[in-house]
Image (cartoon, helix red, strand yellow):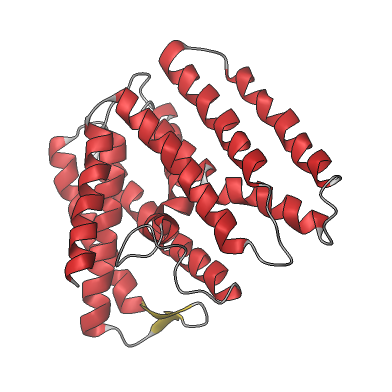
Length: 268
C-alpha cells in the first residue's frame, strides 16, 4: 500500500508538472509518453504467434506527433503528417521479409497499437491548443475530471457497489461506482467553472459526462484486452499500479471525444 501511495503521488506530480511547466515541457512529455505506451502495448501483445514491428510502430508515432506539434508551435501545415502514410506502407512491406507465420496479425497489432496507445494522447495534447495558443486549462481540467471520476467510482463502488456494470470484463466495477464517479466529476466540474471561464457551467458538465462515460468504457476496453491475453497488468513500470496503460486507460477513449466536443463548443 505504501509503494502504491508513493507511486501515485509521484505520478500525479509528474502529470501536473507536465501540464503547468509550459508548452515545451508538455510537448516533450507527451511525445515520450506516447512512445512508452505504444512500446508497452507491443510488449503486452507479443507472443509466439504475434510479433509487432516495434521500430516501425514507434516511427509511426513520431510521424504523427511531431508534425502535430510543429503545426501548433510554428504554424507548419498539417500536410507534413502525411509522412505517416509511407511509414504505414513500410510496416506492410517489412513484413514480407520477416518470414513469420502470421504476418497480418503482426501488421494489425503494429498499427492498432499506435491507434490505441498513442493517437489518444495526440488528441489530449491538442486540447491545450484549442484556442490557438498553449493554455493548460483544458488539459488540467480534463485530468481533474478524470481523477475525480476514478476516486468517486472507487469510493462509492467500495461502499455501495452491488450491481455489476460489466462483470465479464471487470468484475469489480459497479453501477453504483459509475454513478459515484459521475457525481464527483460533476462536482469537480462545478468547482472548475468558478476558476476557468472558457466554458459555461453546463458546458463543463457536458465535458465531465463525456469523460466519465468514455473513461469507463476505456477502462473496460483495456480490461478486455488484458483478459484476452490472460494478464493482470499492462506492465510493471509503476510499482503498485501496473503499467502506463493501466493508469491512462480512462484517457484512451475520452480524449478524442473531448477534443471533438471542445471543437464543437468553440464553433457553435
